[in-house]
Image 1 (cartoon, helix red, strand yellow):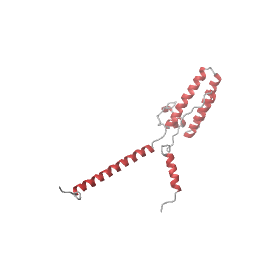
Image 2 (cartoon, rainbow, N blue to C red):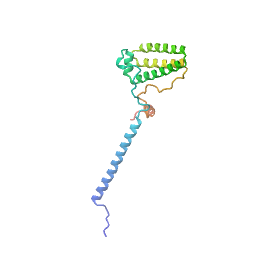
Image 3 (cartoon, rainbow, N blue to C red):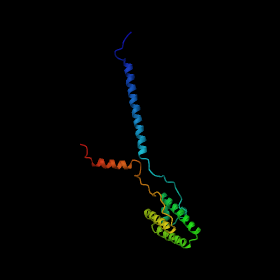
Image 4 (cartoon, helix red, strand yellow):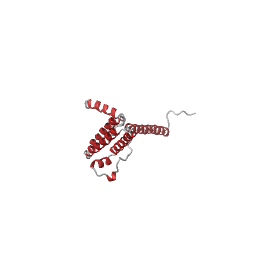
Length: 178
């Protein structure tokens, strides 16, 4: 019986190929895992916006404020939400036959529309007017203020934003490498 002291060149070539194949598969797995982690890291936090039509028809909008509301899906949502909120409170006041509160609500809404329309295309001003009117409605009707999500979600709101800002501060504080 013959004992081999060293493997033949074919066997060592196969072992080298097998080792490089294992390393290649390991690198592929690492790349896929890093891609997956990156996708999760930058996954947006918060709700996704669904287009909601405003309380008026955008095709017949003539005022600059109405056109601005139609151009911004978030303001459309705020307008639709406000319209439902106002109608619900108005119906409740009418059902309780509180005519003084009913007239105050209608006057407040007319004043609100006039102040909102003075905003023009200023999105921040329009949003502020809606918030103020919702607080006035809550004060007049006695209903507690609504707790809703903020209408704006900023681009830096993702899963890793806090850790990224912390790392950025730490890396800035380090002296540069020689």
